[in-house]
Length: 348
Ligand SMILES: Nc1ncnc2c1ncn2[C@@H]1O[C@H](COP(=O)(O)OP(=O)(O)OP(=O)(O)O)[C@@H](O)[C@H]1O
Ligand SMILES: [Mg+2]
Image 1 (cartoon, protein in one colour):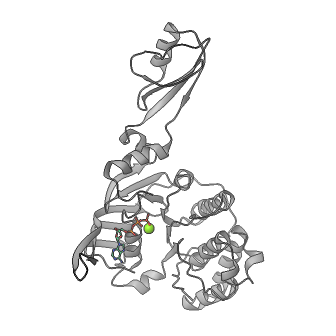
Image 2: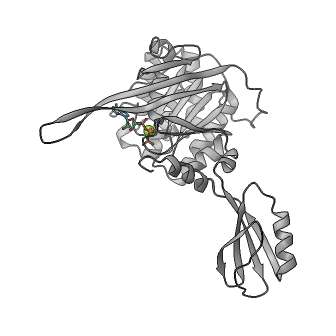
Image 3: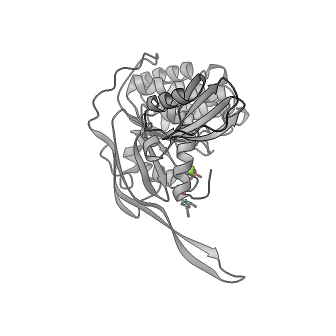
């Protein structure tokens, strides 16, 4: 048994997915960090008999706040400090410096009281009881958090329906596939109606269909109940599907905090104009773009993502026998890889 789930709050909700409502004005911050730091003292071998101490600045002065109901993507390369941040936000780790408030509560000082307001899913580790059927794990969660019967029944019904857990309820956790177990873990984190949900790599190792199912569930759940979600992932499709706001962390610092599409601008990214000519030609030469690839009569011209494609198209059409064209947006992966590369840790 590994469990340490986390419990309760108020809002009821029917469990039936509804269309996403228009976003409400961002107001009250639910998660607040001010210059938060975490330094680990570690010993490493410095010779056959010698060990030397050194410090790892896992989180190195992070400040941000998240308003109620928002889904924020918290991304960065391996070792960037994402999980450490989440552990501090739950009270599992205490910060070495700075100030944290979640639902107005200091997680370190009132971890148990906070536990009733938040839910956590660590994709790498289950909070369920390995030898028990899912149903029994949920029953233990109910007792640990003293979830009132009606609320428990309603939340369990909603999670079972939306996460398609019905056939799995009587299966011991150790017999579940990774994707089934992950859905089971997500349900366990939500049975007490948390206001805030931390998800640390909830789609890790899942196949494409399972990932899509988890994303759809999270999107609906957030829309219906207004649960604030902080999501860590290495899968950018999770971020593109769920988050308008994304924070990029590297070396324990915030490298970017803003809209996902704003990353293109800071990432200095390029769009590509793909042109088909009437015949094979030498690489095109036009102002404001450079030819990056030629394949028969087709050429790829890279130009700054922030620039308009119109003058470029006009210039190419005026000087070359243009037959067809299309514009390709930069892949968000490329933009972020470039950002990671700029300050890089150990890679993903
Ligand atoms: N308990 C610990 N003791 C010592 N160092 C630690 C501890 N936990 C984390 N670290 C170090 O802190 C840094 C940040 O680790 P963290 O787990 O927060 O990274 P992460 O962003 O979650 O990475 P990943 O994408 O690989 O999950 C790393 O250098 C890691 O080795
Ligand atoms: Mg991590």
